[in-house]
Amino acid sequence: MKIGVIGGGQLGRMLALAGTPLGMNFAFLDPAPDACAAALGEHLRADYGDQDHLRQLADEVDLVTFEFESVPAETVAFLSQFVPVFPSAEALRIARDRLFEKSMFKDLGIPTPAFADILSQADLDAAVASIGLPAVLKTRTLGYDGKGQKVLRSTDDVAGTFAELGSVPCLLEGFVPFTGEVSLVAVRGRDGETAFYPLVHNTHEAGILRLSVASSSHPLQALAEDYAGRVLDKLGYVGVLAFEFFEVDGGLKANEIAPRVHNSGHWTIEGAECSQFENHLRAVAGLPLGSTAKVGESAMINFIGNVPDVSAVLAVEDCHLHHYGKAFKAGRKVGHATLRSEDAATLEKRIAQVQALG
Ligand SMILES: Nc1ncnc2c1ncn2[C@@H]1O[C@H](COP(=O)(O)OP(=O)(O)O)[C@@H](O)[C@H]1O
Ligand SMILES: [Mg+2]
Image (spheres, rainbow, N blue to C red):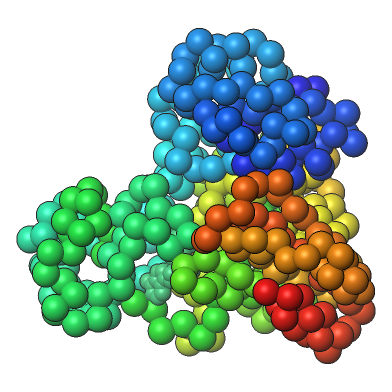
């Protein structure tokens, strides 16, 4: 079976690493000459709107999936005429726009921060008056790793902020005084079978994920699965879907969903019976899902900007390096390590050992 992937970054690369043993081949559509997934499959180097190359991709593959949610809607609509695309165009339409995703949470009775659609500075002023400060202004589309958003703490922060974010459609959200951030990686097969990984506790710095620690029997696991299940069923979803939640007042508020494999699920490559990458491929290919059970204790550390000395990383016991083969650049995710152990105290020690490598 040949899988077409829109986007050729590290997520595509890790999909191919998981799918190759299943007998799958891969083609990646990505305009970047140095797309790091190209090492693992065919690279169609073209823009996402290039219909000749989209048609070529559709002709070559059995199905198409994607590794980022900002794929233009027209690209998915065009491809869908010729080849199955999973997750669906509708799932992508909702997940790529913060207004649509938060409105869906509200419709499904899933708690989420107060929000308002912002199309002008006057909208922003009115929304700040009703939602209050602090609040977060985010562009509705294209934001990632904390880009395209600003925390508004005082009235001084509000003036001119709509223009500062580019005068594009935005969402104002009430600031959530969360005690923690957790994510749930979920998967739904073509036949509607669902499975959920253990909740992961996430730590961000400057808007970028740094550390994910997989939990054991988290008290909010069942609640998170209930919320995620509602969204999966509503969208008739096929593939891996990641949910980011704020932990607040002993409950959860939904922050956002990602219609794809997710950075907070990278630990599953070594830390779970079947990884999020393999399960995504199993789901889209109509194969039985694999076990989402955790194997011992597990955590993931992102390498941002550069990968530390490889031999030093590998000297840490039960540490598994993933070097994406990308050029090093400040603020860019260039690799990660999965750490495992039999007990939580040892895991903490190994996390500290890797963090000390810088
Ligand atoms: N409403 C909010 N209240 C408090 N913190 C927030 C809020 N929205 C976002 N954040 C913080 O900013 C981070 C990035 O925001 P998010 O909406 O997840 O955007 P991205 O698409 O960049 O991941 C979150 O993980 C969280 O730490
Ligand atoms: Mg996020």
